[in-house]
Length: 284
Image 1: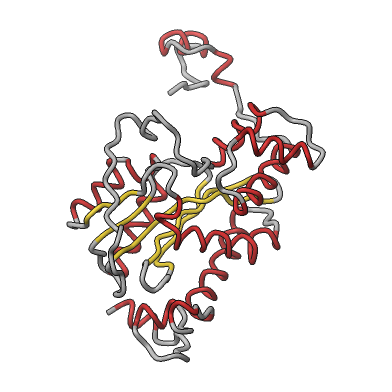
Image 2 (image 1 turned 60 degrees about the vertical axis):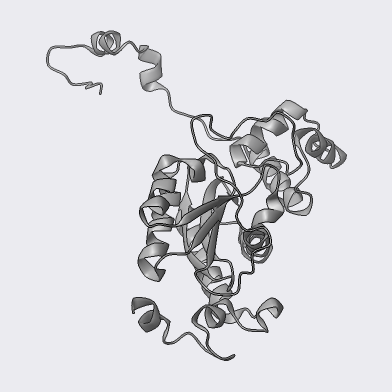
């Protein structure tokens, strides 16, 4: 809103009119230090093993590895990463006080058919000099990743874009399940589902097992792709993660799917389907 080259109003006058300080105009946000990025990587790795670790226990874990940091610093980093311990906490508030949450609809539900239930989650993706956030939309019965997006913020926009892409390619599910993160409870996200007539289901607080299918996906992705590559840039991360998802969908058999790949299970193909006709099937 400030025009440095305005012919009549100086920068100081414009800042006064907008009720902002001149220093804030020139402020540039600093990224995390190399040490904090390393700590975030270690926290992410440990959280995959012990998702019940809160900031206090995570700080103890890091101190045992020689990093003498306090709980407040760990808590700030975990919040920045979008990580929350899974244990039940009494008297906790909703992730966003103005967002509506929905009951969990999958308890005792027999999910056998593709497009019966979809699920989604957001995960932290460390890189060599920064980090990104990744959202994935998955079909529960077949484990197929339907769409995904990377973002440098935790705003809801990239989650909405992934949802709209999945629905454009594959139709719509009967039920869509997520956690109670603010991205998924936002009106922008839930309205897309309501407009399509999709039932909304959300995990209980601290119930990461309610969305266990996609939690397993994150573990495989990080150990088999993200931690091995240490991506330098967002474009490298996008290419590397995209290739891994393609192999996961078309080449990785699952014992729970009778040794079919997610692609074969979703399209109900016999074992050995190589995915050559996927573009035609998904365009139909």
